[in-house]
Image (tube, rainbow, N blue to C red):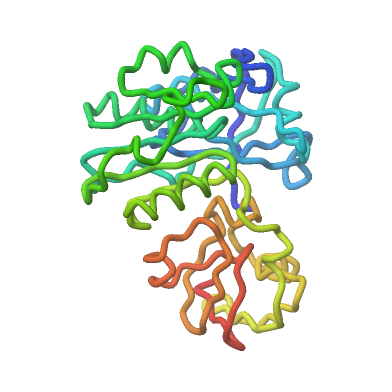
Length: 321
């Protein structure tokens, strides 16, 4: 893993809902934290030091212009792999190691109008976007969907924003979210979607059926759309490394990344699920079999490839590593 870890201190902790905790982090010496753009996330190192620790990714939801502190909001997952429960155990004064922010879900610089659609904990990166768009004086509309008011975080802040529309599953039918609420399809408008997998699939498919192009829809998932086992299904192939040299056989049941790391190759990675983008490299030759949920069609056409989740249709895949 190619992280440079930063030490932070939990300076404040509050329960935003019975299942969502909000943590404010500052630098131990009071210095400014690295700048970030709206939509960014950080890796968080839990329950250990260095590579032995548990690493999870969480979106930064505070105002990007405030470099004095970072804010994270974490949902206690019922099927937690240890990360969310570890975050919920943190208290003010605890130390936490994080990576520098990185971002593949930023605000489009090509759009004039911005439509933010959040489901549940998916509000976190979109909240940072709303902060940035408000400061920039940009045109935006923010749709926040939750099961109920009790399950919705940041309500006090969001209800003061006239750009926000709240949608609750247990509320009247006329306030529930429908894709028609985004208004007419427009080439100068970008749609941003984040939330649980089923929610995202519904919003994205509905938007595309309504005429929104794939390039207009920006998304970030907290979990892969497919079961992780599907990333390693299929026959064997060979990965050839153009810079460091060497050919490596990738067998069924193995990922490109796992094999490279086992062979001592210094390959970038983070989430190992095909959703963060840290492991992306360029394909120089061969036909990739893309199985990630982060690259756009244009990026795939430009030769981008995720080593943790994608495979090859061709016998040999040459990578820029």
